[in-house]
Length: 387
Image (cartoon, rainbow, N blue to C red):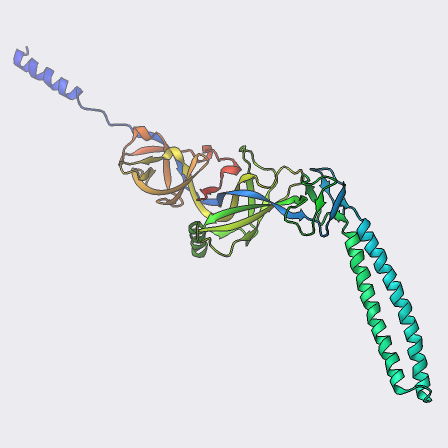
């Protein structure tokens, strides 16, 4: 029979054996394997649309406007008549110049016949040498007078032609600043109207010299590859946030830096068949400048911040333990971060179950690489807003 003291001892031993914790099961986490991928590098810059060609219409002669021959806001073709200036005085000047030319031609013919006769008579000493010289001199004078008369007729014809003002370029014409009956003056400062060719159309944007230097350093180091030389593709975002359907090309990059703003001017050209883009519109241009062939992107939910604000991520090391890694992240690409330092190809980044684990824990990994969604194409570029 057990004594009471022995019974208490045995009961205490059983109680202590029940308090020993069972071994903790390894937590299950989801991981992705880092795989470098090509990633375009683009810059988003504010800009304004600019007409491809612009022509201010001014009179080259003075006179009274008789008629306006175009519809305001319509498309006109090169050589199309726009205004008719009263041609009466210019027609009279043309007729006078034409008559003067006829007179000069008749005078020249008479002097030419006389000069030819005097040459023959001088050979037989029928006229003096002085008379022959005078006849030849008159012939030369009349030949010069004929050229003057021809030039005067040509000038009169040009001025008569200027009474009809025609379009120097094809494009869309703006409102008229004058009406029939108005007096216009040659080379006046006020344009009668303006024609703008808007298909294609330019987009002028500016980029800071700091961003240009950064891009050139990346290209020189070989970290990224250039898309093209002055022919990079450009996309356009309109004022209402919609994307312009036609893609343009970078045609010109400024050769100097504005000393006041530190900016470089870039010019892109866009097709504009429907006239959707009008000169002076505010737009945002997305310039694809280069491609990073080995970009590393990981889901945003895998990145956390420490007390100092530094980016970190948990990875699964070769020993199967959780390890914290400091990261340098760039821009957000859709729902992923572009990581510029801290990860390399083959690293296993923990993206699921982060709340259940700590650094140094043994975990069971489930590969979730196939389940990571890829952001849509428009958001796969690194967007750097212009300053």
